[in-house]
Image (tube, rainbow, N blue to C red; front, side, top):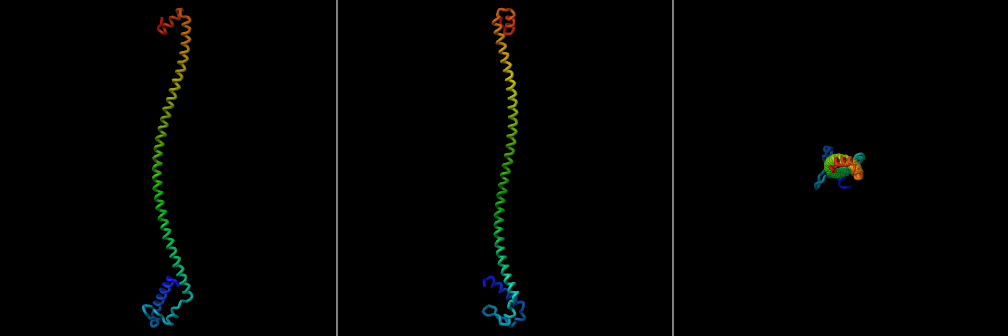
Length: 172
């Protein structure tokens, strides 16, 4: 018999003795600090089949309770560990969300800057197109002037050409 079963039996016997105190008045003796029972007391206190099953079941339940308590402590330790991990991950997530929000603000500023730069580039492209058209028109005008000068050179003695040339170029 193991120690826990013996304790349960001692407790059970003592409570039975207390319940039947009047009947067992002269049948229970204390010798060397231990309660001793005569045959009559033993017969009265002897467990019945039902009591033996209850004691066995009680022992089994106490063993199960002990295991459940151990598992409960282990589960609490695990839950505490998981809670700490959740707290850490929550903090990390909050920090990353703050960084993300800062990046979103920076990206919006960059996007606005890009829009402004694209507007400036579009204006410059428009100005380039205008200047290119003017340069092309100037090239055409310069080509016509060259032809006109060639005509003037060929006809330098003609008085009308001389008048046009002097009007245009201040020459005589």
